[in-house]
Image 1 (cartoon, protein in one colour):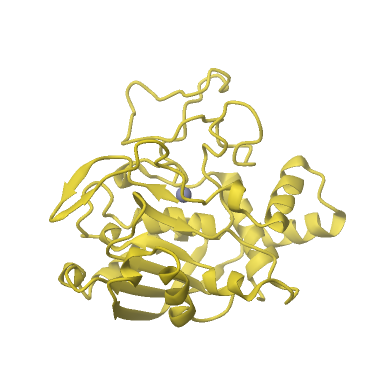
Image 2 (image 1 turned 90 degrees about the horizontal axis):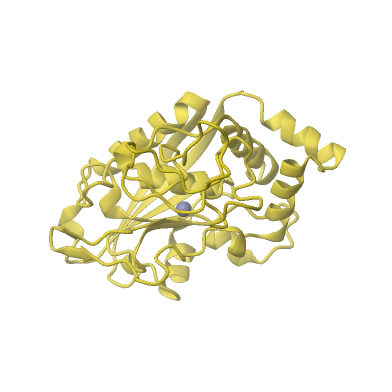
Length: 293
Ligand SMILES: [Zn+2]
């Protein structure tokens, strides 16, 4: 998830982050499916079984990955004029410019438009009802829900991959799969600092199996289970380039917090890319959990 860790007046909308735990919205190891966690732990520790490691390596090759996407625009009656017809197309462009350098491509199948005051907030149980009504495609179809009034002091949240292939999992896993994103973060939207469409990039990173670079909020432990992102104990606010942000003393020589990484919480203009091993992880997760399902 991506949090609004600031207090800002955006048009008529005020977003106030929760004082105590602004980041707690559930995209992280605590909400992850055991099969997903076991897989990333095994791959990270080099203890994956021969067949899992072989499949992960095979799917991590740099072949072109094409992902079908469906965008759902969900608005309150009051906010509906703030979302223009051009915004979903610009959002698709933002997603592709972020992922195409890694040979991952998104194809927008459909855009749905819904005016529903309850659904636009994204709280349970309305959120479940919305997704059950709107979700399209299969488990390899990326469904992004752009909601004008997403609650909880967050810019977005998303589901991590789960083992759905055996057909035995709870059907709600399929229906709930996808990302909730504040609609004002689409390009030209009302969310100053966060309106280049990069929240959708961050959330899609979760959907493809990435954790936050500061996962665990600790300088010790496995963190995000990715070896080429520096250890990081705090989420980043803004874009602290000078002096460099260094939340952990035990970072390697010359390292600092990965504030330009899409899986931190920096502002949109600060984001630059994914690390080599994050890309490998996303490609493996696509192959192991989503492709073919
Ligand atoms: Zn996140």
